Length: 238
Picture 1 (cartoon, rainbow, N blue to C red):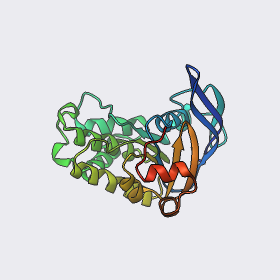
Picture 2 (picture 1 turned 90 degrees about the vertical axis):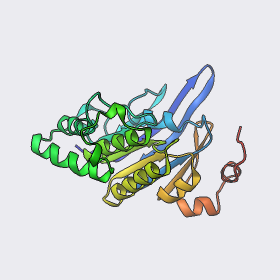
Picture 3 (picture 1 turned 180 degrees about the horizontal axis):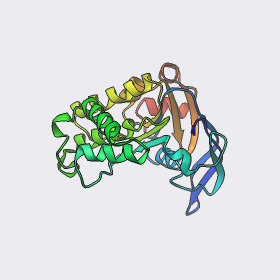
């Protein structure tokens, strides 16, 4: 069952009297890559978790292809967190486990895991325990596992944070390839250079709100709000 479009209406999350998320309306559909940018505490990660049905908003609703999130559609969705969560088994077995969970049989799972490991440049480490990989290798494996299931929609929460340049290049190449193949991707990024490289469009968030949504080039060349201009210029937003 398809998951797109994902729509959100009147999302509101408040803690201790402070609004952490206040999004009137948002639709994610079609293809391409959207990059969420904004200062720390802007609500970017929380928004993804609410859209993914991992966190319940105080008010509002999220719909996956017109209906509330359900288990049947969850296999069409993927998410990679800033700190990867991996199983206590080999790199190859991590990917095969995810593939079997979405219905792949043994031979298909092995073939697709092989391709995923190759794309992530992890084939020499296929039989190594995921827990002994470097931080960059773990993140590449987590992304390879998510991509191998071929979801319609993939959320990435700062997938290259604190990674070495080689791992960053591998992850960006994997994201670009998946987007080119038609996967809908939403990425949180603090690196504005990376946002320029990966994004077809930018969503700028501040104080829990979506302040701007625009194609990447216009956003960086002529942002429409003072907050966005200050953020691009490296000023501290409060």
